[in-house]
Image (tube, rainbow, N blue to C red; front, side, top):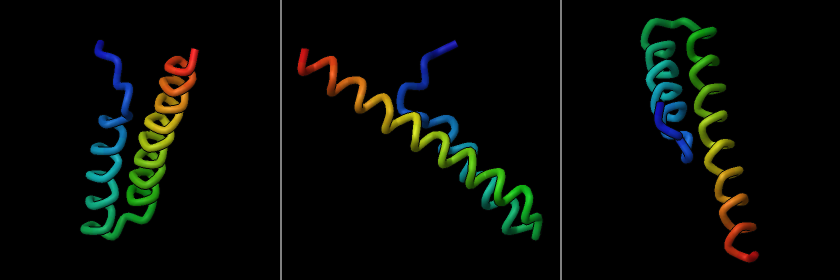
Length: 57
């Protein structure tokens, strides 16, 4: 398994689920997609902070 340091997998899958939910009118699926996308964004930000701290040391 590869390390998804930038949360790209969650961002892409989340966007697809969000769009699917909008198209089908499934609010739960849409919200699930938004949550997964937010998780991907958070993963990216956390890893950027970790990299910045490592660079300063």
